[in-house]
Length: 276
Image 1 (cartoon, helix red, strand yellow):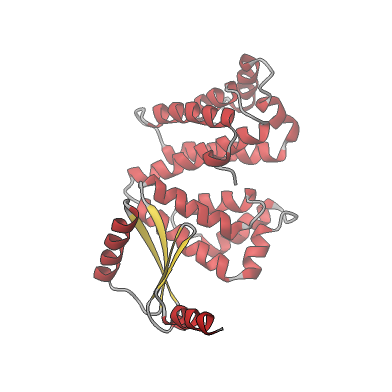
Image 2: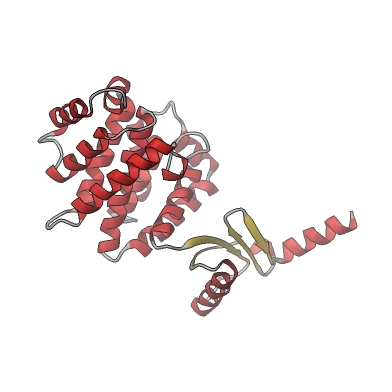
């Protein structure tokens, strides 16, 4: 799953321009961000499996007007006018590679879905649902492997996701998870889901702290911890808390690559290292 931070320079510039068009579309009267996001992601799915079409639309050396005409001939009447406007703008731009065009469209689709959650006041819920699903997948290696299997049919993996989570999470969350499952490569679906959690947190201009606690934290305790982390890192922090009695007491907090280990198990391990 490529994001704006890992795109090459030309693609980052193209994505920024396409995002402006998406913002204009989503700000229009009657715009349905969830529908537009779903349509954009359906195009991503198509292009992911059609190498020739992907190359034709992502060839920066070809005539931009010709690429716009091609995308119009393919999708006019099959997606909304709003989604088509975003697609036409995206393919007319110069991307570093056809693959990064598809990655950019994926980022636009996800952004539209998150905008729908934001407008509905559900962004907190989506973030929490994504976190819980990520923890389930990471905690079940066989499930992670099944969902990450590149040889497995995409529809079979979508069906597995729906069987597990449909009716238990919102539509936006389900659509985002399905997209990760169908496109994630490399480090596995669990990793891709964690990055989605971070993307959602960034949408709220916060960082994510993964907290593992020996005991459940009350709401005041969570608020106090978030306030302390805000002071340490100089920015708002979203907490995601897991319970693990094996810690023996205390907390382990991970923000990015930094780990703050205040657990009993961590102190014992540190003492053992000192004595070794």
